[in-house]
Length: 373
Ligand SMILES: Cc1cc2nc3c(=O)[nH]c(=O)nc-3n(C[C@H](O)[C@H](O)[C@H](O)COP(=O)(O)OP(=O)(O)OC[C@H]3O[C@@H](n4cnc5c(N)ncnc54)[C@H](O)[C@@H]3O)c2cc1C
Image 1 (tube, helix red, strand yellow):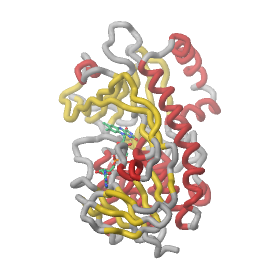
Image 2 (image 1 turned 90 degrees about the horizontal axis):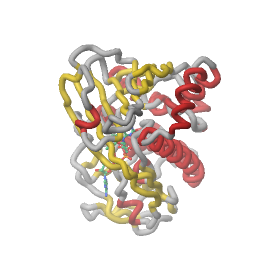
Image 3 (image 1 turned 90 degrees about the vertical axis):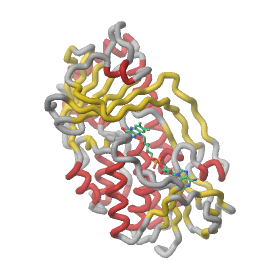
Image 4 (image 1 turned 45 degrees about the vertical axis):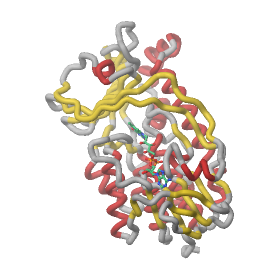
């Protein structure tokens, strides 16, 4: 069983996690990427690593290295136009890692690349997936003209997935009208690195909707929100010494109608994209990858789609709801938030539910994590 040939198209965080998880389970995966290397170190992108990702990567030992480098966020302070509304602390629940770890995407990728190199898996950069001849007995043509006979093909080649396109899986959903802005900044004095901040910005004077700040350490943080520009996002926020990376982007809410066809499987952004609200994208994709590797190790990969699609749909719906809320909070929901959540914060059960949602623990744990726990 473990001699089966696994070809992974795409070495973003999801393809790399697939390679790690297949390798750790005894396969010798081959991983190709049309690009020239990992995400540049100065582009933090998927910054929020959620507990389940750490639980998954604990088995390979990569989580330990991530924990040594990242910043642990265990509190969230919510303000309404700067006025304190409530504060949440993430409570230890059914995870060994009850916090969000802030670690730039490029570092997460490089730690996985190092682990793979130490386990005899080298990324083939500059080699793209082109086409697959038969999804039941896959023969993949690469951009080098090489033809690879694979038992399992993993399409982890991002939102514009050539794998998804080639096997004719439809991509449904729509673009979101409002644009996002983000800025990684250096503060001119130390901040509390354990506290993330969300300001709802509900007064009419603001040029943008809610804004979130995720600390990367005592001196560094990421601001992100729905805003037409970095200037509108940051406005006259005090304490910012320097903006080290800024980006504006539009998001879509789209997902593949199927996550598998024959022996070709889609994972990560190739299968689902949504807004960064809640920081779920990369984390959901890494869970796809780990689920597929686990199922393949038991010869049960045909169950993959059935196991992943419900989680994908749930996260897409929750993210859409969260995005709509921060873009234009409905007055009734806002009133509820102002009154209900501070009270709910005193109730352990409700506090646990809210913390689970923030930490992405609102999905049932995959079976191998339950087994491990
Ligand atoms: C500005 C920004 C901020 C974000 N913030 C967050 C966040 O806070 N939390 C979060 O979870 N997510 C966040 N995301 C989303 C996150 O970056 C993505 O969900 C994540 O990168 C998806 O990983 P992936 O491996 O599926 O796809 P990608 O990272 O897109 O990787 C796909 C890889 O496939 C390669 N490729 C493309 N075509 C081919 C081909 N034909 N053959 C072989 N290889 C190919 C590409 O070169 C690339 O390396 C953010 C994204 C952006 C842009």
